[in-house]
Amino acid sequence: MLLNLGNRSSVTSFVLVGFSDYPQLQAPLFLVFLTIYTVTLVGNSGIIVVRKLNPKLHTPMYFFLSHLSFLDICYSSVFTPKLLEILVVEERTISFRGCMAQFFFGCACVFTEMFMLAAMAYDRLVAVCNPLLYTVVMSPKLCALLVAGTYTWGTLCSSTITYSLVQLSYCESNIINHFCCEYSAVLAMSCSDPSFSQMACLIISILSEACSVLITLASYVVIVVTIIRMPSKGGLKKAFSTCTSHLTAISIFHGIILLLYCVPSSKNSWLLVKVATVLYTVVVPMLNPLIYSLRNKDVKDTVRRLINPKLHCQST
Image 1 (cartoon, one colour):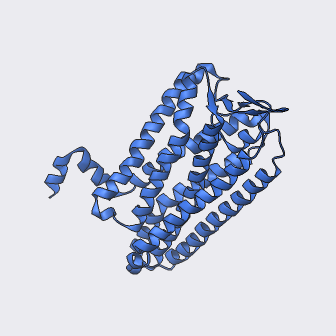
Image 2 (tube, one colour):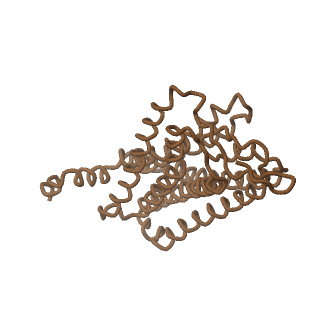
Image 3 (cartoon, one colour):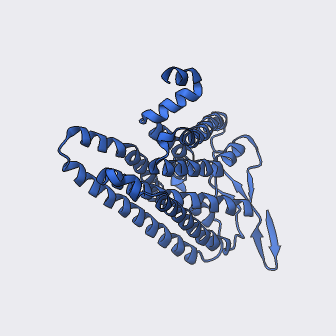
């Protein structure tokens, strides 16, 4: 839809192409994405509930993990419901304000999760290198400050980039060749000079990614050095096991970021961009609770007791 403003027009809504080029896949994709979204909500909500119910999980690591789960719920809920909608309706539209809101909240979740994972790397550093003083160093106040800092930075970054998009004019085609308001797809709709928005996005993205990766790498370099110096094999195994889940989550998160932004911006690569975005916005939020819960005995025990209260009675 176009709104006439003097000699120019401004887009008031966008049409999301989604996966309409593959009509035979609409129903199967709907079922797959609905299943993944359900698992995401149940799994991440479960992590939050389990941490509250089990006193053994009232630790800094699970404090960060519960916030990571909250972010995954928010991130998945920003994109997946609209994706499910455009798979079953013929009118695949989203208002301009709705598009900008989707981009803002999605972008905020990405930047916040990026630094949440970095904060968790520092947490693992303290746990491995200074286990006796772990709860003292990672005090509730410090944990709260780290989490508040990640949310604040994510909001500031997202606000800046979203503002730069809102200031552009959208007066030509209103068809977005994507299933969501992803940055490059929205920018392609602009008919004004996007230099400021591109520069703002580039600087913020590189700065955030570089800082997050450097914090994580520095933490794990120290962790590896500490593990190598450990005399006992039992201590080495325990130290390694505390980091495996986090390393897996970080590798998947940053790996898909690199995949998404290394894809060339051309018409032939839009399908790959969509697939990478699906992995990033739909699949990754489902994986984190699986990665952390399947390797943790306390989490699995708490889940079993929730499912079958008799186990709790027998164990006590």
